[in-house]
Length: 202
View 1 (cartoon, rainbow, N blue to C red):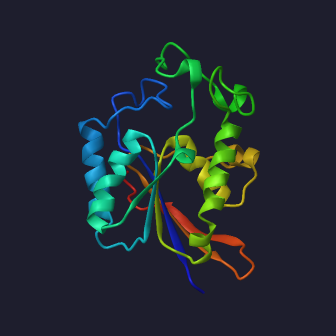
View 2: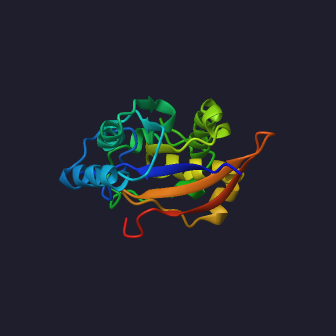
View 3: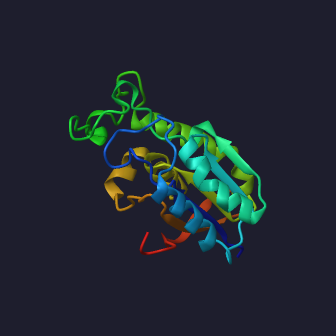
């Protein structure tokens, strides 16, 4: 049985992480984020990957660039991999506004923005768009955001949208790498075999 691998990587830290609802605000990496991006490239020195996909937002591209340069691979950017759009709440301090996305905005869009279900749908479109890579069991790296890679993991696991929140457990930190080993059978059905953080300290 041929085993494929996909690495789900959350972008490096920005000045807004942890304090603001960043969403589609296009913030650069801070000094810690740059260090995390370089560390990711080092961690993959002995790991083979054949394709690198990333969100089109600056912080994801900057995180992915050292890896793509070290591997000599094209960096393929997708809008569908962007973080949730917080709309009118983008940039607001979390200390001033306590959003409960899973309760209040699971299906209902944020004012001027998206719902979590909107993110789930576009991540599903991304996954379907690279289906050939999965069928061929290619080793893939995806650099994106908290909600977008959480949704992608759930889709890879074959979970329904609501089941993603029931299962929980995956809360990717900035600069973390989560490896999923999978197999796609001759009928095109994906099976996740093993999964876990590549670096337990991330």
